[in-house]
Image 1 (spheres, rainbow, N blue to C red):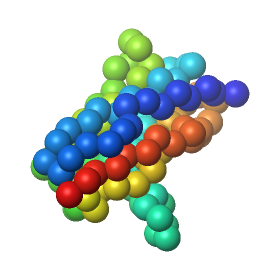
Image 2 (image 1 turned 90 degrees about the vertical axis):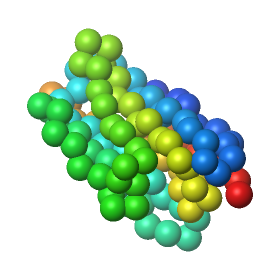
Image 3 (image 1 turned 45 degrees about the vertical axis):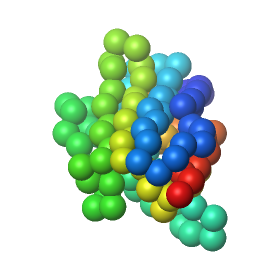
Image 4 (image 1 turned 45 degrees about the horizontal axis):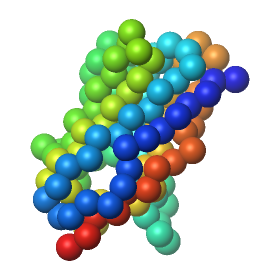
Length: 112
């Protein structure tokens, strides 16, 4: 079973930045970050393929950047110019040789 540890969430003022990390116990192929705000469905924020191609939700394009460090088995989400509507629990989703796993979630709160 793949173990995932997320970190980096917190409280930040609008316009601020945060970097989320998701460390896996095994090598990462593809990965993504998703978020779920209160009363809303979980939505894709950003994804990265095994060769580093990326895709973003329209709402975060130009502000968020997903990346991964294959040597460290970690995927990052750099979030800049944060807005109150970015407030949500963020989850990493990782595809490895053992299958697909979800992180435990990390809270991101953006105050206005």
